[in-house]
Image (cartoon, rainbow, N blue to C red; front, side, top):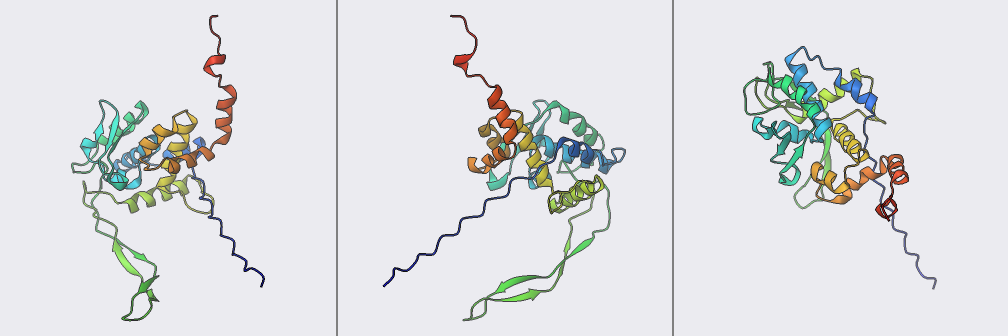
Length: 248
């Protein structure tokens, strides 16, 4: 009898490369908020801190006023992904945006907070399928009707939501005419932009892993595929220490 053919294992799909913004796109994006207004100062500062520290959205909305050490220019992330704290240095270029926001920031427990009080509003989430376990039966699917969720408190000084951050970046990117390949520009693209720029500037991959709060170096290494030309340029101009000019 002919031997049975073993079905070939499917190769795992490669993970998509991180999407990031070119410098000209960043310039257009951060110029959109009206910094003559309180909310404009806050929104500009939010995008700048993400672009200059690589913070995640959920880390931004959890920042307390005491988490920014302006004397040493460090952000203390007390509850990062996986509940891992870390400290992130930031450049002097971020100072002016933080200063502008702090001049008008309402009192509260959150560094980036609601600025203007409005009536709570809602959004409708489209129906989706959920697995429902029946007694003694296999799980079956049913269509769950759309529901309404509150978008968070709107009292001045209260905490912002990650939904707000996502919608804010979507809106500004749209007004700036910036489009991602097949999808909107999200706050996470700002984090990818920071990581890509730091790697291109020569930050060691291990240091970048610590700054981004990645538990595995493998996650950080994906950025090595984003800018291969720049890496080649570095290698082509690098001279090994033993080949450099020295006194014989």
